[in-house]
Amino acid sequence: MNTQEIKQYIDTAIRSNFENVKSETAEVMTSPEGDGRFFGKVSATRYSELPIDKDIFLAVGKSEKLVQIVRLGKAECLGPGKADLDLMLEKEFGIECPE
Image 1 (cartoon, rainbow, N blue to C red):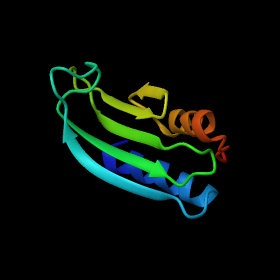
Image 2: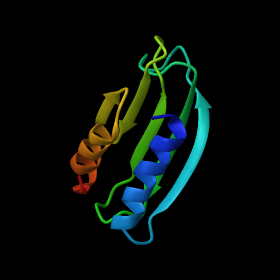
Image 3: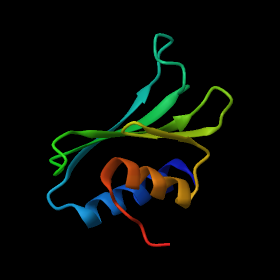
Image 4: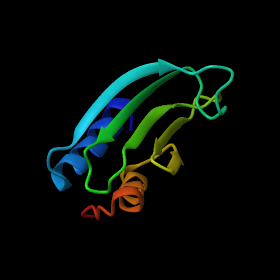
C-alpha cells in the first residue's frame, strides 16, 4: 500500500466509528535529531475530539532503507497490509475491522 492508500484506509475506519472527529495533516521533513526510524518526508496526521480523551497521531513515511513505515499512536509497523492496519486500529481505538 502506498502512503495515500494507508492514510485513506485509516481515516475511513476512524471516521466510520467516531462522530465529530477532527484531523490536521501536514508533511514534515525528519531531522537528524529525530528518533531515527523515519527518513525524509513524513505525512503526519493528528486526530482529535476522540471519545478516548486523547489525541492520536498517524505518521506514514519511509525508513532509511526505503521501507514503508506506519506509526499510529503507540503501534508501529513496517510494510503494512490491510491486516496490519486493522491490528493497529484495534490496538489504538478498539475498532474491529471486518475481514
